[in-house]
Length: 271
Image (cartoon, rainbow, N blue to C red; front, side):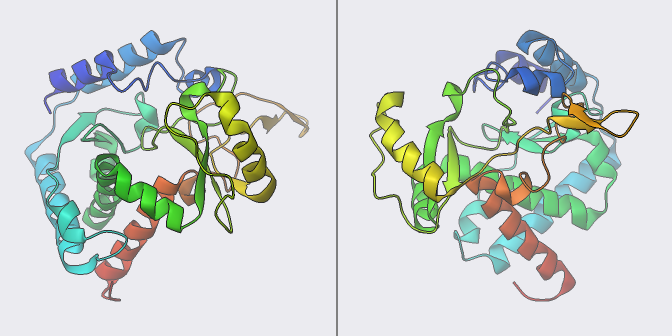
């Protein structure tokens, strides 16, 4: 995508990501409100100008990632299917948009130019991870089946959380919060039109019997005397230890597992 198209996508916010940011999300992103967040993010896109070397690095990393999918991945999806998904990239500068972290929205992989200076294998590994999220977004039925088989249970809609929520927003997730269970919930999921009160019996069982997933902002920090005091996050990675990565959401659990296999493949340790 061109810098102008990237900026327009961010400003249009067609997926509602910026509109759904909580109070702590905005604080962690050094933004006063959703408009300020979009303005700063769009500015980080329009200031990008890739060098020929950077463009080549991305192309080579994408080819490397697809070679891994083609030769190594049969589960949890057919790697040939994901390799066939077209690559669409958008680039931003520095850390003013999503802390400079790679992520996806719609069918687009967003990369900060900072990450282009990493090793070719690290960049390819990042693309392996992010393309999993594109596959997930495009194949909700397959993902629902996979999550059900793994006992990941949806229990609360992301868009219904209060603005005071301490769970970090992540554009790579779907519309639900999940819990990791040891068995399927005995209370079936209401249909997609269900109201919040219809979910409560199921939520109660899940929260009593399963481990809720989500990256929770760290709510404390040490003062100059070493005492723990309430604190707002300074950046989007300021979350409680052990709640991010594969523990944040089933989509992340899958992406981290597949990307971990890429590391083995690179080292010649098989698939």
